[in-house]
Image 1 (spheres, rainbow, N blue to C red):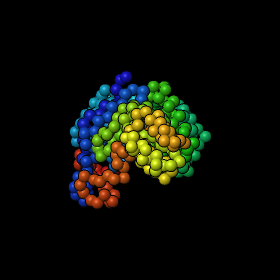
Image 2 (cartoon, rainbow, N blue to C red; image 1 turned 30 degrees about the vertical axis):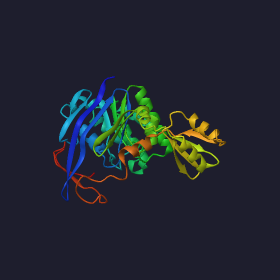
Image 3 (tube, helix red, strand yellow; image 1 turned 135 degrees about the vertical axis):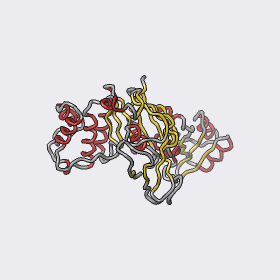
Image 4 (cartoon, one colour; image 1 turned 90 degrees about the vertical axis):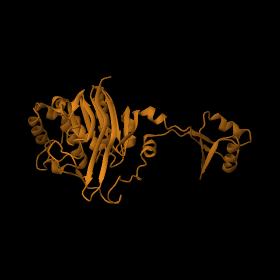
Length: 334
C-alpha cells in the first residue's frame, strides 16, 4: 500500500488568555495508507482537531513533519488540494441559500463541473431536499450537506471530523454505507468520531490520541487483541463457594451481584472442570472480549484529563495560537 498521510513528531503549543501554555500536540505520529477507512479517536481536547487543522494548513505546528500523497505539508498542499476533500469542525452555510445553490457556488469556486452537484446530493441522501433553504435543515441534514461539499471534487482522500454529528440511527447507517462505498471505489477515508461502536463497525485501522500523543495504532482487531485479558463471565448457583474453589486453583475470580469474572484464563475448560469436580455446574461461561470503547477508556482515561498548566480544569479552555496560521494569527478556542 502507498502512504496517503504521514505525520511524524508533530508538536503544537497554544498560549492561554489567562497565562500559561497548553501543549495540544506533543510529538504526535499518524500513518494512513491508501484504501483504508482509518478511525481517529481521542477525548475532547486531546489534539484531534488541531492535528487535522495542521494537516490542512489551517494551523502552523511548532515542529514535526507532515506529508499528504508524499508531498510535504503545508508547503506543497496546493499541489494535492484537488485530491483532498475535508470537513473539520462544523461548517457554516448561508441559511437563505438552498442546499443546491450552496453546492453550485462551491463547485464554481473550486473549478468543479456543476454536474457534480446533483450527484453528491444523491450520494448523501439530499436529492429531494436540495431546493430547500439551508436554514430549514436539521443539524443532521446540514452535516450531510457538509459531506456533499467535501465530495464535490471526487477526492482520493476524504477527511471527516465527526460526520455523524446530529444524525439519527438511520442517517448514521447511511453515512456508514457511504464511507464503505467510497472505500470500495478506492477513496481513502480518515474519520474522527465519538461514536466508538460505529468506528469499530466501519474502520479497518485506528489511531488513538491522548494528551497530544499517539497511544495506540494499527488494525482494529489487532488493537483490541492487545487488550484481551482472557476474561470470562461465569454464572453458577453457589457463587461464593465457586470463587473460593477457583481461587484455590490459582484463578482470580471477582464477584459481581449475579456472576463472577475470571481473568487471565488461557483455557476456559479449566473453569468448568474445577467447579464440576466439586459438584458446581456452570450455567454460563462467556468470553468477555474487549470492544473499542473499553480500550479507548483504558488508554485515554477519558473524563480524568487535566491540563498541562493554566486555569482550573473545570474552566472552558481559551487559548491563543502562538504561531501564524494560513490566514494569519488569531484566537483559537479548544
